[in-house]
Length: 517
Image 1 (cartoon, one colour):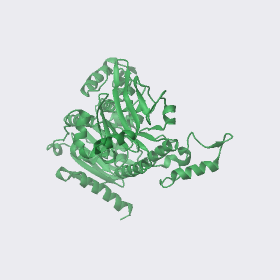
Image 2 (cartoon, one colour; image 1 turned 180 degrees about the vertical axis):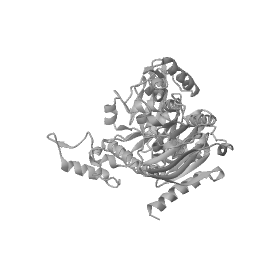
Image 3 (tube, helix red, strand yellow; image 1 turned 90 degrees about the vertical axis):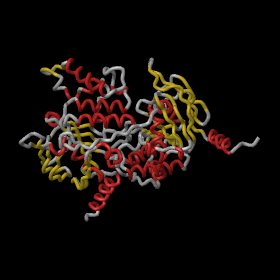
Image 4 (cartoon, helix red, strand yellow; image 1 turned 135 degrees about the vertical axis):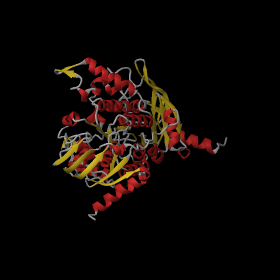
């Protein structure tokens, strides 16, 4: 019997399957996190995994990496069933999970981090000769300096080192959980180049991302999860575009948010920040009107993020003053976050895991954490005041949880971000600073966040959005400040505010300043 071209291709793909799940499910009591998922991952491919926050992505990769135990179903590697799939078993079989936050020991060198836990020994003593030989082999042509301390690595080098460590430990299927978080476009391209190079050496990647453009650029196939179920697995990537991926993820067409122009902004007295210097900043004046949304963009080290943190008292500076709208006298910028909160300035960190959440506490406790003075009397928590905040924000933000009393670490990333946003809003700020507010959350929740912020401005709240997403920022702000060398070098508004113009201004300024011209 002669096979058709399509049948032959399908048979070849089946023969190349390196990882397979059959009817894989995970239940937590009555809650079903993953429901009967069967998928196949081909050898030497980059397989995208898409889904909303809470769709089951983390559960699925937790099961195939051995970090979680399936309630039912089976995992196969190279066609053989896996038994006792704990982390040790799966890593021994070549499956490694590289988490979103690179696991690097800052005090160790690149070489020591690379061989962490598997240092070559002889009679219990590390063999430096074998150690150095292995390091040279692994780091050849990677651009990594074996003697550089881990703390001095940039973001993309930290991710490359984690991938290499998994590879050196025997990894043949490497799961990358949102590896491009905090990377600029140049670093992202460098990471993708590195992934393609390893794919050419028969390494398989499972690539998790909330960015459709990344999936379309780097992936050979894509699987989409929704509500714990596999809704589609697509091998013909050429037939996809970003809108089609969003529809698959959400189960509906995605309605992008666009902020309406505010004609009355200039009539209000602005909040004015003046004479800011020190900490790498040199800003003569920055103004923001009540109800205005201003975007901060710039290359890494440009000063956009530094200025935002200085406004909240997180960055030490030499001097700087702020005069709020409606006040006749200015005062020094706050030197501590508590002072900033007292003056009506709130800040949402770009790193919710480290700066935004207390993982062992409940949703309720996290949401009122920045408002303790307002919900306490004589140092004692007032449960009624606390509940009023929960009633206001838990429901209005549509946080997907059975109640506000459950632990926050049981929530998906998007719902955790909503809790963090609720926490800063509960302080009733007049100036709200959002640092990468949509990083690591799905396309649907991103638009929800944009609409929530837009509604705040109707009440006169001024909003600063620090972001690296140029396509997004032009839809959600009134104007954009482009930073370089600690200064605002250019501003854009209206029809002039395009992603191309912002990128040219940010990269162009950086190139000029770097050459000293």
